[in-house]
Image (cartoon, rainbow, N blue to C red):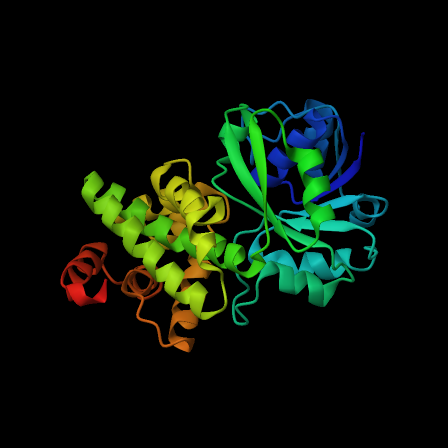
Length: 330
């Protein structure tokens, strides 16, 4: 059965999801703010800025009109950066109706409020049948059809069923989950740890150091998320350790690349400009520090990533401080 799908956001992940859905035989409207991007997608079947090398499936139609994208879509996928999410949700909310299913794939938290994207959707739209797409999903690998698994976490079974029908394939397995809060927190905070892993790689550290950072990072994420009401099992799943491992290990991860660039001496803004895409770990590092403080949780790794990014702490000094911590903290 062919469904009508809207994908809001023509970045790397949004373009990939639109391509996957269209490759599965569905009709996809891919919304972008940028007229040149829409023209390139429709005329050349490419999006070289965000998804270089991908030949976008014919079933994807890029459009500038948000109303046209949203109205009539059975499934609406929000794939926009976290700090632009509320603005887009508010605009789309003018045309969304309660019957529509909404899934977001944004891995971040709103600065200042620490609100999760599902909460923003609830505040800015009438949508209630909401889900979260998360997991160890490097977009370029999915574009190439390499095997992967992901989860759609929701309290509405129909959201999972339709999302699975639209996106799943023999090379992309989809699994259900219900811990929306835990998945969204893991998805956001793991980006901060990925920056730390990139710093380790940029300093030429070995696998022992990287494993130490990933383990330390998972522990700190779990402490924060559990205090806020997450389910412990989430940390052992695709959106927990699965996403954390791939984001920390893959040099294709923009957060990993950012950390490596900073370790090599680049300034934050210069590294971000060169990467050319949003690195969600940067705003998430601010939210992580504030969330840990609000719950009186000691998170030394997350704290030091924040200080490197925003307070000019040297990467080498951050490592020295971590290595001097009391073992009792683990």
